Image (cartoon, rainbow, N blue to C red; front, top):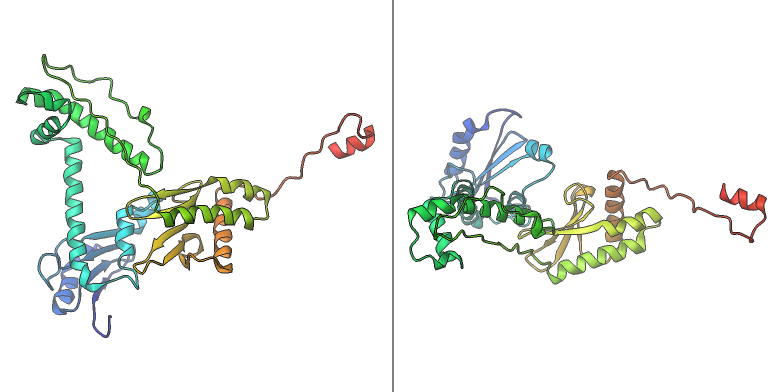
Length: 333
């Protein structure tokens, strides 16, 4: 409800039931109430989100967003696009008037991704011609014939795969060029036909000034807060992951080791969300509460990684000429 008007229609079914068959029931609720802008169909584990991107007040046949908790549990991760979509409909951020436009953009985005996947696995003749004519080496070809297209088909596929691999590695801040190699079974060039070998450059998103401040503050503050030698050393393993829709501070691994997600609000204020503390949101302002959350989340992630927090006693060695043999032996033991 929003100011007394229903804006979300929710159809909930038993876990494991085939929820597709209940789409008509949800659609009847959606279409009957002009104020409803978002429809959700769920069995408790799977969630499908629907809008009216085609016709006002008429629910689409296809969902613009899907969330499957069982799949997330199996994979141990969640796609950034899904996470961004879910974040936009959180309480305090959800705007009923924007759902249709956002859904249309999401559906278009998914269709673009599908087409790009097709180009990667089975590039069309037109796509290969485009690559050849737009590339520096291919642009020197006087006329791109079918023979030239066929000769470069496998190379274009390899280049697309290399590009995707580089982008995937770049998301984790690691995309060395020597890991992306041209396959050994490259096609032989047709006589007089240059083989195009593109070298895509992966662009790594840079943190904003506010995000850089969050990184520096987290490390410096934890170095001050920890009272354990092991934790002090583990602070060095704190890193960040930046994408177009999210910014995350984590310990050791991006998903299992997440300390907090950095969320900048429309009013410019920043919230830090701590998944390890039941998703608690804390304003990014120096406070005793923030100190407590940082220390708790960091300590929990270090423990979950299997690191023992028991600090071993310092090793003492005998110094020649400094202590008698009996005392030296006791200290060494």
